[in-house]
Length: 332
Image 1 (cartoon, rainbow, N blue to C red):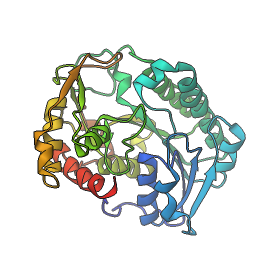
Image 2 (image 1 turned 90 degrees about the vertical axis):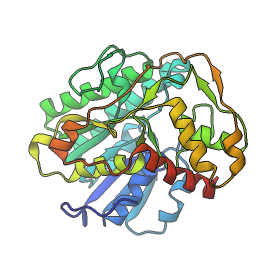
Image 3 (image 1 turned 30 degrees about the vertical axis):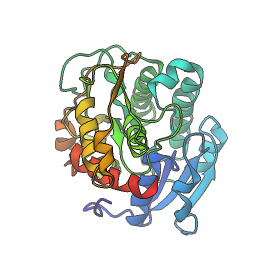
Image 4 (image 1 turned 45 degrees about the vertical axis):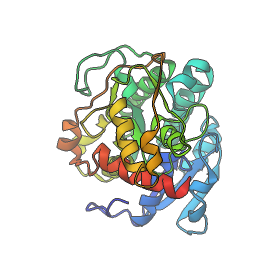
Protein backbone atom coordinates (compact mmCIF):
# COMPACT_ATOMS: atom_id res chain seq x y z
CA UNK A 1 0.00 0.00 0.00
CA UNK A 2 1.22 3.49 -0.75
CA UNK A 3 2.55 5.69 2.02
CA UNK A 4 0.39 8.19 3.83
CA UNK A 5 -0.05 11.56 2.22
CA UNK A 6 2.44 14.33 2.67
CA UNK A 7 -0.45 16.65 1.99
CA UNK A 8 -3.22 18.36 3.96
CA UNK A 9 -4.81 15.81 6.28
CA UNK A 10 -8.05 14.08 5.31
CA UNK A 11 -9.00 13.79 8.97
CA UNK A 12 -12.56 15.09 9.53
CA UNK A 13 -13.11 15.10 5.75
CA UNK A 14 -15.83 12.99 4.17
CA UNK A 15 -15.12 11.32 0.83
CA UNK A 16 -17.70 9.54 -1.30
CA UNK A 17 -16.36 6.74 -3.49
CA UNK A 18 -18.86 5.62 -6.10
CA UNK A 19 -18.18 2.09 -7.26
CA UNK A 20 -16.38 1.66 -3.96
CA UNK A 21 -16.75 -2.12 -3.95
CA UNK A 22 -15.00 -2.46 -7.30
CA UNK A 23 -11.35 -2.99 -8.10
CA UNK A 24 -10.12 0.62 -8.04
CA UNK A 25 -12.88 1.84 -5.73
CA UNK A 26 -12.15 -0.61 -2.92
CA UNK A 27 -8.45 0.20 -3.04
CA UNK A 28 -9.38 3.88 -2.76
CA UNK A 29 -11.62 3.13 0.23
CA UNK A 30 -8.70 1.39 1.93
CA UNK A 31 -6.17 4.17 1.41
CA UNK A 32 -8.68 6.89 2.38
CA UNK A 33 -9.42 5.12 5.66
CA UNK A 34 -5.67 4.82 6.26
CA UNK A 35 -5.48 8.59 5.80
CA UNK A 36 -8.19 9.15 8.48
CA UNK A 37 -11.02 10.17 6.13
CA UNK A 38 -14.66 9.36 6.70
CA UNK A 39 -15.60 7.23 3.69
CA UNK A 40 -18.96 6.60 2.06
CA UNK A 41 -19.15 3.82 -0.51
CA UNK A 42 -21.96 3.84 -3.08
CA UNK A 43 -22.24 0.63 -5.10
CA UNK A 44 -24.94 -1.53 -6.67
CA UNK A 45 -22.63 -4.57 -6.88
CA UNK A 46 -23.21 -5.03 -10.60
CA UNK A 47 -19.45 -5.37 -11.16
CA UNK A 48 -18.09 -4.76 -7.65
CA UNK A 49 -18.04 -7.34 -4.86
CA UNK A 50 -19.03 -7.14 -1.21
CA UNK A 51 -15.97 -9.18 -0.23
CA UNK A 52 -13.78 -6.28 -1.41
CA UNK A 53 -15.14 -4.05 1.38
CA UNK A 54 -16.17 -6.62 3.97
CA UNK A 55 -13.28 -5.82 6.28
CA UNK A 56 -14.36 -2.16 6.48
CA UNK A 57 -18.01 -2.71 7.41
CA UNK A 58 -17.25 -2.62 11.15
CA UNK A 59 -15.18 0.58 10.82
CA UNK A 60 -17.17 3.51 12.23
CA UNK A 61 -15.55 5.79 9.63
CA UNK A 62 -17.00 3.72 6.79
CA UNK A 63 -20.57 3.83 5.46
CA UNK A 64 -22.00 1.60 2.75
CA UNK A 65 -24.93 2.78 0.63
CA UNK A 66 -26.23 0.10 -1.71
CA UNK A 67 -27.67 1.86 -4.71
CA UNK A 68 -27.38 2.74 -8.38
CA UNK A 69 -26.01 5.99 -9.82
CA UNK A 70 -28.87 5.89 -12.34
CA UNK A 71 -31.12 6.78 -9.37
CA UNK A 72 -30.84 10.54 -8.79
CA UNK A 73 -32.44 10.28 -5.34
CA UNK A 74 -29.74 7.81 -4.21
CA UNK A 75 -27.04 10.12 -5.61
CA UNK A 76 -28.43 13.03 -3.59
CA UNK A 77 -28.51 10.88 -0.47
CA UNK A 78 -24.92 9.72 -0.95
CA UNK A 79 -23.60 13.27 -1.47
CA UNK A 80 -25.06 14.75 1.72
CA UNK A 81 -22.30 16.23 3.88
CA UNK A 82 -19.56 15.10 1.46
CA UNK A 83 -16.39 17.14 0.94
CA UNK A 84 -14.94 15.21 -2.02
CA UNK A 85 -16.32 12.74 -4.56
CA UNK A 86 -14.15 10.09 -6.19
CA UNK A 87 -16.43 8.88 -8.98
CA UNK A 88 -15.35 5.40 -10.09
CA UNK A 89 -18.75 3.83 -10.81
CA UNK A 90 -19.05 2.91 -14.49
CA UNK A 91 -19.52 0.02 -16.85
CA UNK A 92 -16.05 -0.53 -18.23
CA UNK A 93 -14.93 -2.60 -21.22
CA UNK A 94 -14.95 -1.69 -24.89
CA UNK A 95 -16.41 -5.09 -25.94
CA UNK A 96 -19.24 -4.79 -23.39
CA UNK A 97 -20.20 -1.38 -24.80
CA UNK A 98 -20.23 -2.78 -28.34
CA UNK A 99 -22.56 -5.61 -27.29
CA UNK A 100 -24.81 -3.35 -25.19
CA UNK A 101 -24.31 0.37 -25.92
CA UNK A 102 -27.59 1.39 -24.28
CA UNK A 103 -26.71 0.18 -20.79
CA UNK A 104 -23.19 1.56 -21.06
CA UNK A 105 -24.66 4.94 -21.94
CA UNK A 106 -27.25 4.82 -19.14
CA UNK A 107 -24.62 4.11 -16.50
CA UNK A 108 -21.65 6.06 -17.84
CA UNK A 109 -23.48 9.15 -19.09
CA UNK A 110 -26.84 9.38 -17.29
CA UNK A 111 -25.34 8.09 -14.04
CA UNK A 112 -22.40 10.47 -14.37
CA UNK A 113 -24.75 13.41 -14.91
CA UNK A 114 -26.76 12.39 -11.84
CA UNK A 115 -23.59 12.43 -9.76
CA UNK A 116 -22.61 15.86 -11.08
CA UNK A 117 -26.05 17.28 -10.25
CA UNK A 118 -26.03 15.73 -6.76
CA UNK A 119 -22.49 17.00 -6.13
CA UNK A 120 -23.43 20.48 -7.28
CA UNK A 121 -26.53 20.54 -5.08
CA UNK A 122 -24.57 19.26 -2.05
CA UNK A 123 -21.87 21.91 -2.64
CA UNK A 124 -19.15 19.27 -2.87
CA UNK A 125 -15.71 20.91 -2.85
CA UNK A 126 -14.19 18.73 -5.56
CA UNK A 127 -15.44 16.08 -7.97
CA UNK A 128 -12.70 13.74 -9.18
CA UNK A 129 -13.73 11.21 -11.79
CA UNK A 130 -12.36 8.22 -13.65
CA UNK A 131 -11.83 9.25 -17.24
CA UNK A 132 -10.28 6.92 -19.81
CA UNK A 133 -7.41 6.63 -22.26
CA UNK A 134 -10.03 5.38 -24.75
CA UNK A 135 -10.87 9.06 -25.27
CA UNK A 136 -7.77 9.34 -27.48
CA UNK A 137 -9.53 7.14 -30.06
CA UNK A 138 -7.87 7.10 -33.46
CA UNK A 139 -5.29 9.76 -32.57
CA UNK A 140 -2.03 8.17 -33.71
CA UNK A 141 0.49 10.45 -32.04
CA UNK A 142 2.61 9.03 -29.21
CA UNK A 143 2.91 9.79 -26.41
CA UNK A 144 -0.69 10.84 -25.79
CA UNK A 145 -0.96 14.42 -24.52
CA UNK A 146 -4.14 15.60 -22.87
CA UNK A 147 -5.12 18.36 -25.31
CA UNK A 148 -4.88 16.23 -28.47
CA UNK A 149 -7.54 13.54 -28.91
CA UNK A 150 -8.99 11.72 -31.89
CA UNK A 151 -12.29 10.21 -32.93
CA UNK A 152 -13.73 7.68 -30.42
CA UNK A 153 -13.64 4.06 -31.59
CA UNK A 154 -16.31 2.53 -29.34
CA UNK A 155 -19.51 3.41 -27.48
CA UNK A 156 -17.49 3.17 -24.22
CA UNK A 157 -15.00 5.76 -25.50
CA UNK A 158 -17.86 8.10 -26.42
CA UNK A 159 -19.32 7.86 -22.91
CA UNK A 160 -16.01 8.70 -21.28
CA UNK A 161 -15.44 11.68 -23.56
CA UNK A 162 -18.96 12.94 -22.79
CA UNK A 163 -18.02 12.76 -19.08
CA UNK A 164 -15.19 15.20 -19.69
CA UNK A 165 -17.48 17.58 -21.59
CA UNK A 166 -20.09 17.51 -18.82
CA UNK A 167 -17.47 18.05 -16.11
CA UNK A 168 -16.16 21.11 -17.95
CA UNK A 169 -19.67 22.55 -18.32
CA UNK A 170 -20.47 21.98 -14.63
CA UNK A 171 -17.39 23.95 -13.71
CA UNK A 172 -18.01 26.85 -16.07
CA UNK A 173 -21.77 26.98 -15.43
CA UNK A 174 -22.13 26.02 -11.77
CA UNK A 175 -18.65 26.47 -10.32
CA UNK A 176 -18.17 22.79 -9.41
CA UNK A 177 -14.45 22.00 -9.27
CA UNK A 178 -13.63 18.82 -11.18
CA UNK A 179 -10.56 16.77 -12.02
CA UNK A 180 -10.60 14.01 -14.65
CA UNK A 181 -8.10 11.15 -14.50
CA UNK A 182 -7.61 9.34 -17.80
CA UNK A 183 -6.77 5.85 -16.62
CA UNK A 184 -4.39 3.80 -18.78
CA UNK A 185 -4.91 0.02 -18.39
CA UNK A 186 -4.99 -0.14 -14.61
CA UNK A 187 -4.12 -3.47 -12.96
CA UNK A 188 -3.38 -4.85 -9.51
CA UNK A 189 -4.82 -6.47 -6.41
CA UNK A 190 -8.59 -7.09 -6.36
CA UNK A 191 -8.99 -6.81 -10.13
CA UNK A 192 -11.55 -9.49 -11.00
CA UNK A 193 -10.23 -12.31 -13.23
CA UNK A 194 -13.72 -13.73 -13.80
CA UNK A 195 -16.54 -12.79 -16.14
CA UNK A 196 -16.90 -12.22 -19.86
CA UNK A 197 -15.17 -8.83 -19.75
CA UNK A 198 -12.25 -9.56 -17.41
CA UNK A 199 -9.19 -7.37 -18.03
CA UNK A 200 -6.20 -8.98 -19.72
CA UNK A 201 -3.79 -9.22 -16.76
CA UNK A 202 -6.03 -10.95 -14.18
CA UNK A 203 -7.50 -13.15 -16.93
CA UNK A 204 -4.04 -14.26 -18.09
CA UNK A 205 -2.90 -14.82 -14.49
CA UNK A 206 -5.89 -17.09 -13.85
CA UNK A 207 -5.25 -19.02 -17.06
CA UNK A 208 -1.53 -19.43 -16.40
CA UNK A 209 -2.27 -20.68 -12.88
CA UNK A 210 -4.48 -23.37 -14.46
CA UNK A 211 -1.77 -24.14 -17.07
CA UNK A 212 -4.15 -22.92 -19.78
CA UNK A 213 -2.89 -21.01 -22.82
CA UNK A 214 -3.93 -17.33 -22.85
CA UNK A 215 -5.30 -15.92 -26.09
CA UNK A 216 -3.62 -12.77 -27.41
CA UNK A 217 -5.71 -10.73 -29.84
CA UNK A 218 -3.40 -10.18 -32.80
CA UNK A 219 0.31 -10.94 -33.07
CA UNK A 220 1.15 -9.54 -29.64
CA UNK A 221 2.77 -6.36 -30.92
CA UNK A 222 -0.03 -4.11 -29.67
CA UNK A 223 1.24 -2.13 -26.69
CA UNK A 224 -0.25 -0.48 -23.63
CA UNK A 225 0.82 1.83 -20.84
CA UNK A 226 -0.06 -0.66 -18.09
CA UNK A 227 -0.53 1.22 -14.82
CA UNK A 228 -0.29 -0.38 -11.38
CA UNK A 229 -3.04 0.42 -8.87
CA UNK A 230 -0.75 2.27 -6.44
CA UNK A 231 0.02 4.89 -9.10
CA UNK A 232 -3.73 5.39 -9.59
CA UNK A 233 -4.30 5.75 -5.85
CA UNK A 234 -1.60 8.40 -5.71
CA UNK A 235 -3.24 10.39 -8.52
CA UNK A 236 -6.65 10.31 -6.85
CA UNK A 237 -5.21 11.43 -3.53
CA UNK A 238 -3.26 14.23 -5.16
CA UNK A 239 -6.39 15.36 -7.02
CA UNK A 240 -8.41 15.81 -3.82
CA UNK A 241 -5.62 17.30 -1.71
CA UNK A 242 -3.75 19.60 -4.07
CA UNK A 243 -3.70 23.24 -3.04
CA UNK A 244 -2.71 24.31 -6.56
CA UNK A 245 -5.82 26.04 -7.92
CA UNK A 246 -4.39 25.81 -11.45
CA UNK A 247 -4.49 22.02 -11.18
CA UNK A 248 -8.28 21.98 -10.92
CA UNK A 249 -10.76 21.65 -13.79
CA UNK A 250 -8.29 19.75 -15.90
CA UNK A 251 -7.89 16.19 -17.16
CA UNK A 252 -4.72 14.19 -16.53
CA UNK A 253 -3.20 11.06 -17.94
CA UNK A 254 -2.94 8.53 -15.12
CA UNK A 255 -0.19 6.20 -16.23
CA UNK A 256 3.50 5.33 -15.98
CA UNK A 257 4.71 6.87 -19.22
CA UNK A 258 6.07 3.61 -20.62
CA UNK A 259 4.55 1.00 -22.93
CA UNK A 260 4.67 -2.77 -22.96
CA UNK A 261 3.62 -5.12 -25.76
CA UNK A 262 1.26 -7.98 -25.03
CA UNK A 263 4.08 -10.45 -25.69
CA UNK A 264 6.31 -8.64 -23.20
CA UNK A 265 3.43 -8.68 -20.73
CA UNK A 266 3.02 -12.44 -20.97
CA UNK A 267 6.76 -12.88 -20.43
CA UNK A 268 6.59 -10.80 -17.22
CA UNK A 269 3.63 -12.85 -16.02
CA UNK A 270 5.43 -16.12 -16.74
CA UNK A 271 8.59 -14.89 -15.03
CA UNK A 272 6.92 -14.01 -11.75
CA UNK A 273 4.31 -16.79 -11.70
CA UNK A 274 7.05 -19.35 -12.33
CA UNK A 275 8.51 -18.47 -8.94
CA UNK A 276 5.43 -20.18 -7.48
CA UNK A 277 5.01 -22.89 -10.12
CA UNK A 278 7.86 -23.72 -12.52
CA UNK A 279 5.48 -25.46 -14.95
CA UNK A 280 3.94 -22.10 -15.88
CA UNK A 281 7.09 -21.19 -17.82
CA UNK A 282 6.22 -23.97 -20.31
CA UNK A 283 2.66 -22.76 -21.07
CA UNK A 284 2.26 -21.68 -24.70
CA UNK A 285 0.45 -18.57 -25.93
CA UNK A 286 -2.37 -18.69 -28.50
CA UNK A 287 -3.14 -15.92 -30.99
CA UNK A 288 -6.48 -14.79 -32.42
CA UNK A 289 -7.81 -11.90 -34.53
CA UNK A 290 -7.48 -8.31 -33.42
CA UNK A 291 -10.40 -7.12 -31.30
CA UNK A 292 -12.97 -4.66 -32.67
CA UNK A 293 -12.53 -1.15 -31.24
CA UNK A 294 -8.97 -1.72 -30.00
CA UNK A 295 -6.28 0.85 -30.66
CA UNK A 296 -2.85 -0.54 -31.63
CA UNK A 297 -0.68 1.42 -29.23
CA UNK A 298 -1.13 3.49 -26.11
CA UNK A 299 1.50 5.53 -24.32
CA UNK A 300 0.85 8.46 -22.02
CA UNK A 301 2.72 11.65 -21.43
CA UNK A 302 2.62 12.23 -17.66
CA UNK A 303 4.36 15.62 -17.73
CA UNK A 304 1.17 17.55 -16.99
CA UNK A 305 0.44 15.41 -13.92
CA UNK A 306 4.03 15.76 -12.72
CA UNK A 307 3.97 19.53 -13.15
CA UNK A 308 0.54 20.42 -11.80
CA UNK A 309 -0.14 17.61 -9.32
CA UNK A 310 3.47 16.70 -8.37
CA UNK A 311 2.79 13.11 -9.45
CA UNK A 312 5.67 10.65 -9.27
CA UNK A 313 4.75 7.07 -10.20
CA UNK A 314 6.14 4.55 -7.73
CA UNK A 315 5.64 1.37 -9.78
CA UNK A 316 6.95 0.34 -13.18
CA UNK A 317 4.95 -2.36 -14.91
CA UNK A 318 7.46 -5.05 -13.88
CA UNK A 319 7.36 -4.05 -10.21
CA UNK A 320 3.58 -3.88 -10.39
CA UNK A 321 3.33 -7.31 -12.05
CA UNK A 322 5.55 -8.82 -9.36
CA UNK A 323 3.29 -7.45 -6.59
CA UNK A 324 0.04 -8.29 -8.40
CA UNK A 325 1.10 -11.86 -9.15
CA UNK A 326 2.00 -12.44 -5.49
CA UNK A 327 -1.45 -11.15 -4.47
CA UNK A 328 -3.26 -13.35 -6.99
CA UNK A 329 -1.27 -16.42 -6.01
CA UNK A 330 -2.35 -15.93 -2.42
CA UNK A 331 -5.97 -14.98 -3.11
CA UNK A 332 -7.15 -16.88 -6.19
